[in-house]
Length: 424
Image (cartoon, rainbow, N blue to C red; front, top):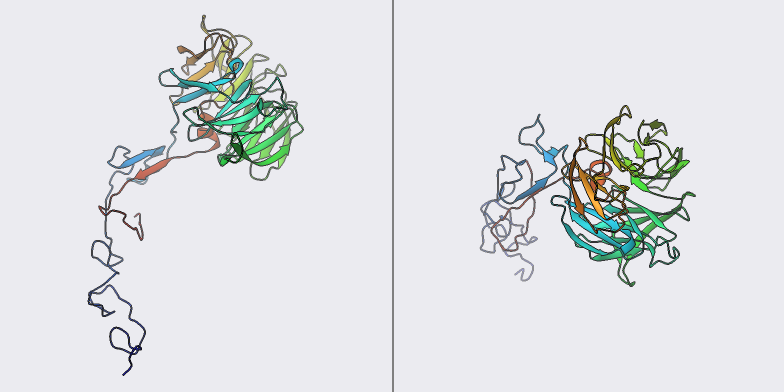
């Protein structure tokens, strides 16, 4: 009777569903079969529970974290901090050798020096993972992709990919999404390049180009601000480009050379081209002129304390500028024996200023009071030509802010399957 139609419990009904209640609803002889967790308890009771009373302590077992602090109003919390985490590297173009060098900013030791995969390299832009994007100007034949291009190198100097930025690739900046923007000086074209996608079907591998825009300007440099824009180092017009839409907004600019964004929204420019002082342009286009560096300063950067710094290419100096008044805060001449014409400047993890010298292959390091820390050889006798975000400091402090908190937890089971993880 009722053969093949009754369920395992002998009922003319659908197979019963096991519940977590200490009974055997599906009549398979096993109580709570398949519904209890690895600890033998029923949901919503937790299987594993761990208390971390000091989540802000990055030295706790199984934990790695950086860029965080405890919110003063919520003891035991974690929130984004004012500090930043950065790589301990600077990337400097050794242009006449067609190479780029990586130095340890803690020790000044050169880790490696490798081919730039093009000719006459200059700007270097450091990504959040510590890899570097290098522009090759290709003066010998700017129409040749083997000379004028943008190349992505891993933190160990190995080749990742190349983008065909022809006709003198002279600028590079990384936006908040990790995409790379690079400009052509001769054509005014601006490329948006994926920071991660690589086409390995070509030889060498190609960086994937996401978009191309025509600015109509001779792009000499680029900077990515904290509001989703890149700015061109050009004059008498600078172009602000929305990184999401490509929409362009021109502003008047009295002069240019190096370019650097500030957390305030202002973008700062050197004044070597145009013979003007170091100056900033606000988001509404207002020009703020400092009293420093007329026709002298090439590169600029912005320190975490807000001060603006410039490389005095024209008078062999380093300068510190008040961002509010535009006044000179301190100035120092570069030491003897390291060459002349400092041509770039960048901030390291410790807040010190690194300034490569154009002639003779040395880099100088400075405290924020304009006192000299040290001078290090990069490639003595060679030309160093880098003025850009060559430590990645501006990307981390202005363009994008990131922190991380990782806690390892071991259930004790091999290949454990986690149904739900709750944070309370």
